[in-house]
Length: 309
Image 1 (cartoon, rainbow, N blue to C red):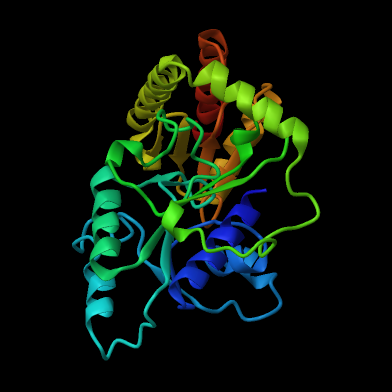
Image 2: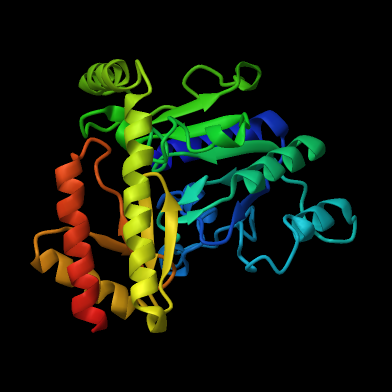
């Protein structure tokens, strides 16, 4: 699973650099195993660890201060100040779009700025694309449009092509310092997943049709969400996301949950995300038809109306 791809990335970054500390971001989610959990933001999930989660320092994700502070001002100041107390980091780990954290889509210029900061300070950049890779935002990788080249990329979920478990940790060749068997386990390499993953890559990534379709369908969702925001100004709704990773933020988790319940009663399964479950989260199959999308958006519109009216 994805958490293991993250564990491999963290272990390798520490082995390559000889440093222990990792920088993560507010509202990040990287997995439930102890290493991945140490770089995860959610306090409820972190609380289940049972031991201190150490060697990770959170920094503000894009727009955490709603634009009130310049990008990376705090982070870079700590790196450059010998009195800051920040341990020199082995790596930074980041999601191009935070899924569990509330469908927070980092601006492309923010990702580019982070890449530049890491290069200036000799820090490895780990891009966790477990949930947002494999075309979820349009391009195969969520960071492609930013024009950056992370040192390590984590993939899982959709990479199996057919729901079969698979996880990949992609690394630059010069970082391949593993000893044989240094990161292994009982269930490494499920053969049918290699077959389905290869076929999915052949079918869906031999041209740019899926990418174009994902972007177009994502814009349809964005348009519907924009209409909902304008229809209910008193609710202070916020439309979020990129590609076919979309969210509608409500004033409370109770409201978002009520909308998801109303949608379920109408035949549409959704979940919530965000620190308080305040975001209605939409992650449809990339292969859904235009008709299915229309039906789903109609149900969402009805469900929001049923709750807010």
